[in-house]
Image 1 (cartoon, rainbow, N blue to C red):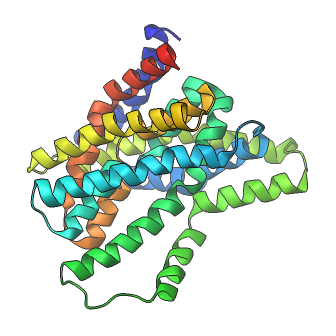
Image 2: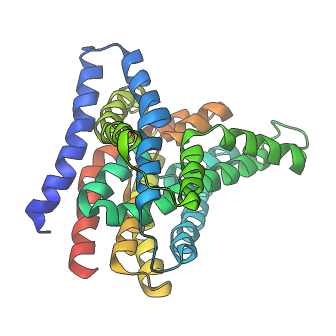
Image 3: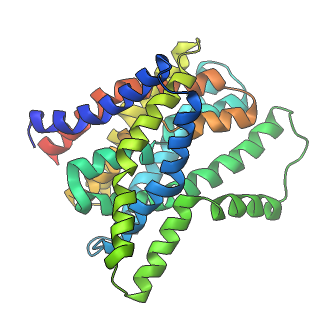
Length: 321
């Protein structure tokens, strides 16, 4: 995969994002269309892609625990750094610190990661990548929920906190209704039956899965018009550098030098980390009623610079992987 090959992977991905942004900017389609396409991607198309890939994937090789350790150990380190940058570097409160942490560590694995990884590495690279996706949301949701509770108490917004039982029930209820989590559970349940995925059901799932990539990128582009740049750029620039440069570098070191993962598994983890910040950062900021500009700016900046950073990491992985 030479530089020309990398360009043919990266540029179409971000061109589709740009098209979606342009359509929203020029009001060629109502804003609600982007939301509807995003819902289709999240509820229907991406679960179909995940189900098909996980059902048919060959998971022989290294332990998934080494892959998860490589990625999520880096998540914890980057989250702590992002939180510290916002709280101590820019003297913001604890809730803003959580927004800083999630903005620097919550990757857009679905809308950007899936298109890049499947285009660059095919189903073979998609399998380890989806192993990350399979616990990415649950891990980040649990971490976010716990830190939200602590931050609200630290800032005096809430007296005391939810009991561990209520906290666990809330998290489980949220995850149990998440289409991606349902698709992951369903795929492994289907694998357990050892039945083949074939015939008309396979054709239907394949067609839905094929729509996931272009629709995801288009809807992301339309949603970016909503976030935009909202001032107070310095902390967002710092978090963007942390997200696009430090995070994937740390994952690469842990996966390659510590865990000893094979090149394809290392590449899947690094590209996941190199993805722009996911929209979940803004959703959490909205839940907090604070840090909207910080999250929105980081989402917009990392997506704008993502065409360079993802291409850079693909080149690094090709050269040194």
